Image (tube, rainbow, N blue to C red; front, side):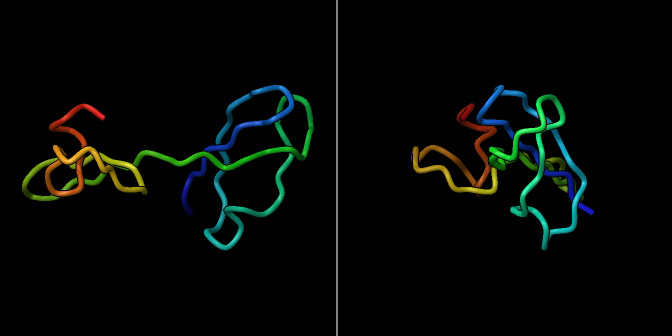
Length: 76
């Protein structure tokens, strides 16, 4: 199961939770204050293949200097 990152809008605590993909946006209580005002953060991912490691975000970068969908070359 994937690990998702969340931030509490009430106390600003950032935390992770292992959940099924179908539950990624389901309500979850903050582990610090118990608030249900929690938002899932956009996570950075890392993958490895024969050519090496690739790191990026689940979104896309519009800076124009990123190569192959990875911001490792431009530092974003």
